[in-house]
Length: 342
Image (cartoon, rainbow, N blue to C red; front, side, top):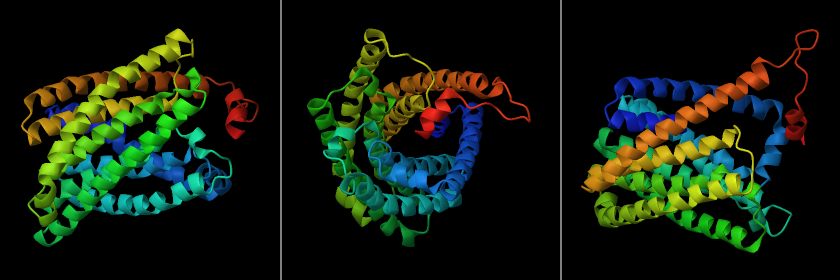
């Protein structure tokens, strides 16, 4: 998701070689994750069921939808709209299924009460998934046959509107968790940045809807979509300083170690999404200042991608590449393995 959206931004800013390189990384990572996910479903179904029943983790499954649509949007930039439509069909199906299964298993079916005590930043991934459907739909709508445009416009606007309501719900639940229950520094982890990323992709979806070919649903909502997109961009901008301050409070004030963790990518993706949203909104609504902010933020997001990518490579080298082997070629279990199993 992080790599794909930054690749989209670089393509918009006409940096083709770097954009193509990141697009290749995005495609390879998506393929690897699909294989690993299917293997996990086949080999460890009990753990998958545990994740679906855990409100702290279950909403992470919506990254399947968002990541697939981000890849599809990037492929559309190179003219592969057929692949974009195919990936959208898969992502839309997953969005429908997960949209009913995850709330039931992780929230309504959870035995521990109150469930709001487990709300965290990953709950906003449901919003990101919904808006990614809107973005991908709005991307392919103008280039498909005219007979498809009315239905695709309806899907884009509906998924965008659903995402807005989901943002309000997730925001209320997460705010209640922060106000009513103890919030330790270790709890304020990187996925809280997804709150800003969800705002940003709402802006991007709105900007793409404004660019769709004329259809009854587009004509009926264009003014509303444009106005709310500006409002969400303003709120996403406002969220960045508190999120930075929270990170300072967590690591500098309370000494939580700052090492590599996969959740750091949930900071890179919102930064990239905010950049692309600003660039698109600046063009669609003729707001050059917003576009300039998006362009500057794109390079900040790319720098963050490099930093986290290097940290990931170093972590892999230390934990996998240099781990001593037992006789027979096996590696000894790491202490973290036991914690992961628990």
